[in-house]
Length: 379
Image 1 (cartoon, rainbow, N blue to C red):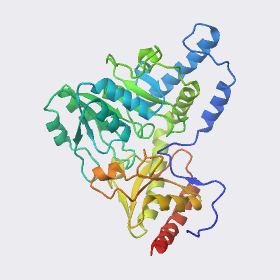
Image 2: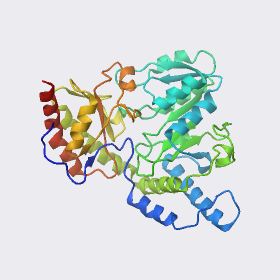
Image 3: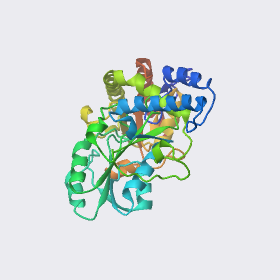
Image 4: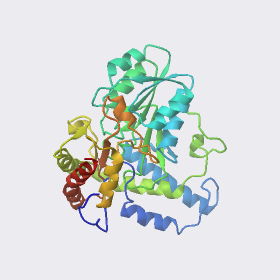
């Protein structure tokens, strides 16, 4: 196995596209929330009003981050719940049009609730709008589109997609989870039917996401049994998750451009170090302005993802495979397969608010030796 020395006490963490460490402001806020009496925000007593005010403050903070109004934002438990709710609410009785590069939860929900048809993508992962135009000539449809791909970071300009779908009477769900806090969303101007956003990738707690619903859009709820979230998402609210999401959004909003620029610079250094190793290729659009700034997908010739992850972990570097939604097993990447690329040997590096230049230097020092040692073992 790799012999680059013992791992450091604090690993270099490059899996921010799965979840980022909590921001210090979030940790401080959650400690304060734990001190207040627990209460159901749907009640009328003083304790409940305090909790409800915290939730509504958080709603305003998140809505401001993504350029929506607070009344449009519905809090959910996760990206999976948000996208499933959107697909079920908007896609029932319709054809559902989506690229094979969408995240698994979108495609699985589409298969369950309607007739799924695939939108073609090119080798960079960009949607073929001409093909989408042809698909929209049939019966009423729901168009599912990612703003930033969760494995390759490839960006799709959602404006033309929404405009094309709207002109054909189609509904639109945008998955903006990977884009949240990393690119300008301005969802109020875009006015898609539903947009998934999340906070765990920007330093908020896991277990809390959001769904931005178009103003005036009827939206049948997925769950039953309550009138929370204005009747759009029954169930007692996750106070800690919601407050943490709001605080992370408020901390990030004034610094989006600065954090994005730092992420783009760090990713460029990481990519350069990786592709300097023989047989390593960067996947997705080569133009950094057409990718989310904080992540990069790589394929490594001759070595599958799992030994690379384990080898880097042994020397204090944490990354993930390209198949971001396969948490229990490292399955081939459906995203890369849809792009016509090698789906078995992809890895993903992603940076975030806490990534330091020392972390980047650690990766550049150990990545080449780890790959060399693994190839030597195979030989």
